[in-house]
Image 1 (cartoon, rainbow, N blue to C red):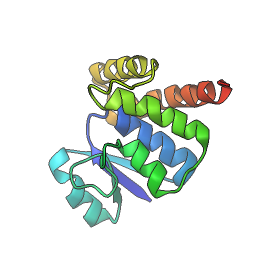
Image 2: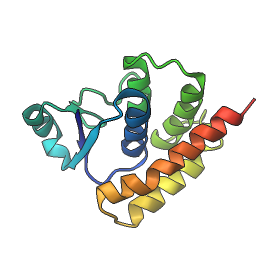
Image 3: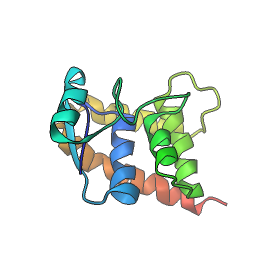
Image 4: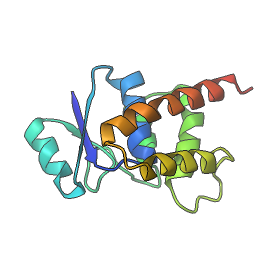
Length: 141
């Protein structure tokens, strides 16, 4: 299945593909397009849209797109929910209850963004960050 979102990804638009590939749709293909074309491309391609205004899976009720996907797909792995707190804190500006790991994830996401890599290259290089964070969350008591 294809999944489409806004180009120039940062935290949530990298975290979501990690979640999708690992827990929802291992065969997923990701499309990054200009924000104003996300819904049109999703409709034309029969793709899921995420992390864009009006998308099928996007911020709602104070949740970031990663958290919305967890909820929508009934993923109840406590480690994923711990990771979701970190992603939320990095993605939602001004969250005072963010875990201490969130600013680090935000710094890494912003750093990758500043490298001005092709969106798919950035995704490829960034996914191991989420593998590592998931492993770290899993190791916590």
